[in-house]
Amino acid sequence: MNRLSDEELTDLLDNLESDCSERKRAWTGDAPEKARQAVCAFANDLPNHGQPGVVFVGADDDGSVANIEVTDKLLQTLSDMKTDGRTVPPPTLTVERRILKGTPLAVVTVWPADAPPVRYEGWIWIRVGPRRGLASAQDERIVAMHLCPVPAHSWDHLVKSDRRRAGTRRHTRPGSSQTGRQD
Image 1 (cartoon, rainbow, N blue to C red):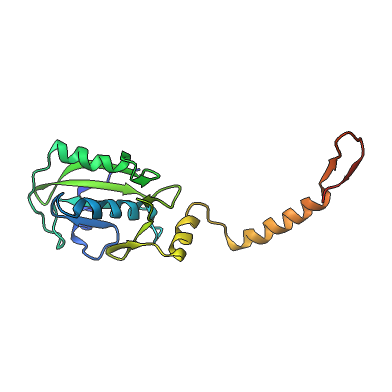
Image 2 (image 1 turned 60 degrees about the vertical axis):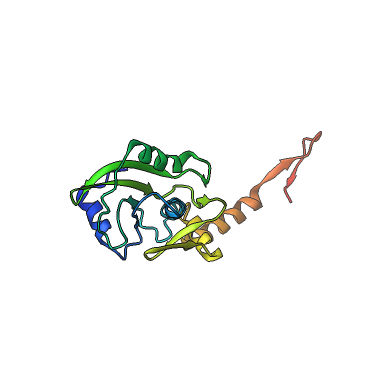
């Protein structure tokens, strides 16, 4: 888990088509709800980038900075997204005040979950290009496979291995010294 450099953050801020960034002018109106959905989507990492996603508070959709006051209270409120119980399992994230383009921004960096899917208020959110959306059943399966991908050739090996073990397993009946083949 490495901290993103100012250059990396500025590149994400300027890349308007990125599926790894979300911009909010301020923490008002529907911004808290949409940012929480984005945090959930970044944690689910549908494209399997294996890289963090970033929510910028104090940035417009065109990548320009809004010049808001980044207070300790704002940073604490953003940090609460991890522990308020609305996102399960809690995402791995950091919250910090960063100076980008000469202006302070609140930056929430979210790492992909190691045990997806992550749900926000019971729903699985994903990134679909530069926007967030609800996961389809297929998306849910893909996200869940990030947890423990099994190469196709492994399935055959597992089935053959299980069949071999099934033919050699023996058990002892309770109260008897006789062994018999397990059914």
